[in-house]
Image 1 (spheres, rainbow, N blue to C red):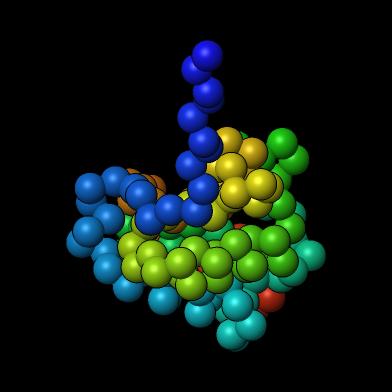
Image 2: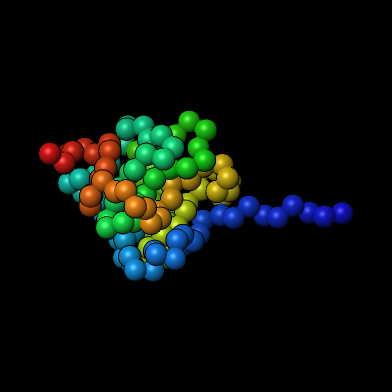
Length: 125
């Protein structure tokens, strides 16, 4: 009898272009924690919505059933950074299973400039 493969948990995977963006998570975790441009813990993010960007690397949600709060996003991005990821990666919200929803940091072609994109306590003017 075949057993199903274990779902991929927290990881530092992403586009090959992430290699040129080392240190992104240091910038993003600073932006999404309680710094001047921190994410509002009560803001609700939807799938695909940009959270924060640095260069062409952005953090965004994917595979969630109903999105996530700013507080959940902040905690997950910090877990990703503490996992040792420096450029790209994903941190699942539920059961360490990326298929149950996650914020992901990855290379994108369309950004919101550097900083918090949406849900900032002190939005960019």
